Length: 154
Image 1: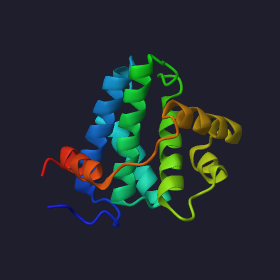
Image 2: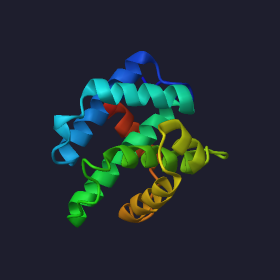
Image 3: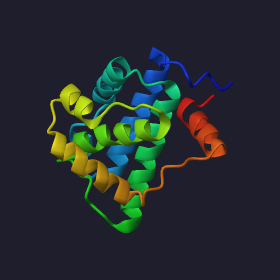
């Protein structure tokens, strides 16, 4: 059964999202398995949930966009996203997700402050990610539901 995606994710859902994030990154970015684990992914997602107040739907959208980004990079044989900039790329995925999903998203300066990152780096990285994705952010409802069931194997 599809859960309410307008609520904050539960701890159980965070675990499933963390497993997906770790596996997706390990599969999509060479060398990332040396430092990306489910527990590190969980810490990142819990931080995002707490500070950004992301709903389950927003988290799922971000995970689906991450998967799409890595697929596009593989198709284009583009190694722009690598172990050196993975953290920035992940933050930017959440930035573009919220800009797409919310009427009033957090500003990039808010994200820079939360993650102690350089604002210019975030701004430039956001554009790079959007270009890699060919500026295609839309995910249809059927695709979203299939993705939901892939993550939660319900």
